[in-house]
Figure 1 (cartoon, rainbow, N blue to C red):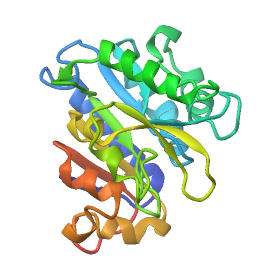
Figure 2 (figure 1 turned 180 degrees about the vertical axis):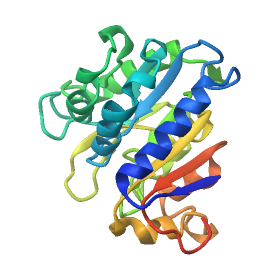
Figure 3 (figure 1 turned 135 degrees about the vertical axis):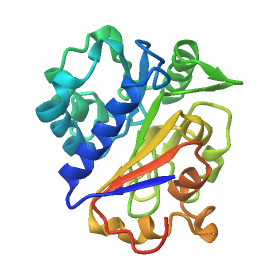
Length: 243
């Protein structure tokens, strides 16, 4: 587990993107030399900064023809809705870089039958990615962390989603009741690179306790951080206690 602390959110994004591109350039890196890079994006508002920095400073350095883009989670809303994770990525990244529609695999949050969409997306991911047993293996899973300790859309109290063999599952926001489709724990922890991009001082308490054994079963993000094969944290939060 590695921690990268920056002075601000944009610099933390630069750190992540420099590291990602360095891994991709290695013959033994993501996808192997010249191979496909399977990356899963998270939602929420924080990734907008990462996407903006990517477009402004790293677009020409990125081998977009090798990328296949998936999502960690999605809200059960239309792709035009302001809450849509796909919409945020489209506005801030996808419309500004040379990715074709065949390279982008979105979760269809607008589907009336969310359970059917979970099955469709899980089946598609299983057919597209290399497998570790029954678990699809992404090259990069880019995660955020909420102030309540959630990651993906797996919230405290929904720990069963950390241990299911299904790649994706339905979850519910505990406050708003909004339904979501979320990548489950085994997929997050078995990725070749499980990277957290976390900004904002409201998350300092969670970040500083990520490695504490007593929060492993209280914060889904702590479980993923402690269980992932290759976890890294990119943040503008000054980490005081060891993470």
